[in-house]
Image 1 (tube, helix red, strand yellow):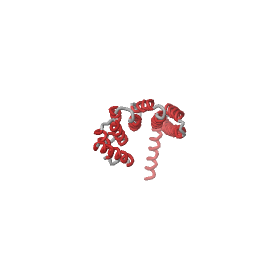
Image 2 (image 1 turned 60 degrees about the horizontal axis):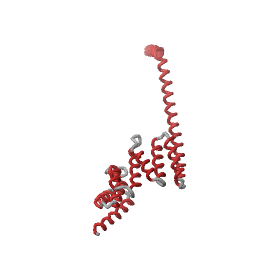
Image 3 (image 1 turned 180 degrees about the vertical axis):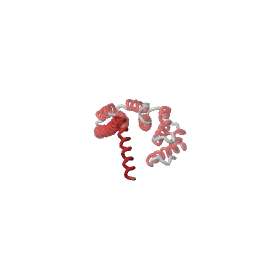
Image 4 (image 1 turned 90 degrees about the vertical axis):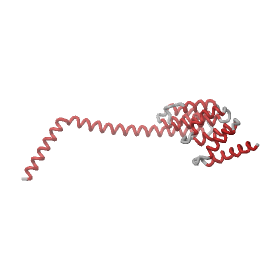
Length: 218
């Protein structure tokens, strides 16, 4: 008796499946096709991105080699081309930074303008913008008025700033060269007092603090 009920149950299931297939078979097939296409498209995009990254890496290394060999003009042009051609944002921003770095060897003003352009670019990540701001400050610390250096670097010297250590050191140096010993001491002490500051930077700032102490005695 149980076999009869089982056969009836299986027949009912087959009929229901047949009805579902008759009604929705085309949609099921379409769904499967779309799923396969979506997976294939995703895999193709991953392959394309990997290919783009590999090509960008090779081009970046070639430009860096030119810089290493002292061919700064050629390196600057290579980085500029990479920044214009590459589709990967990180490589594009890094190439712009390196282009400005190469420009600094021959034309510091042009390099500062290039760094400023990066720092003002909202499409670039905060890390790259702040790196550009610090690099511009480094080029200006020997020549620009302290007020101008402070305007650029003070926002980067905040306690959670990624480049706060370098920004504080540059602010201290700029203030010292401008004869503003109070500002120089304030920034030097801020740099030296940061437990996360690199040892080499602390050593340099300690020298500056010693010079400031001698100035006070004098």
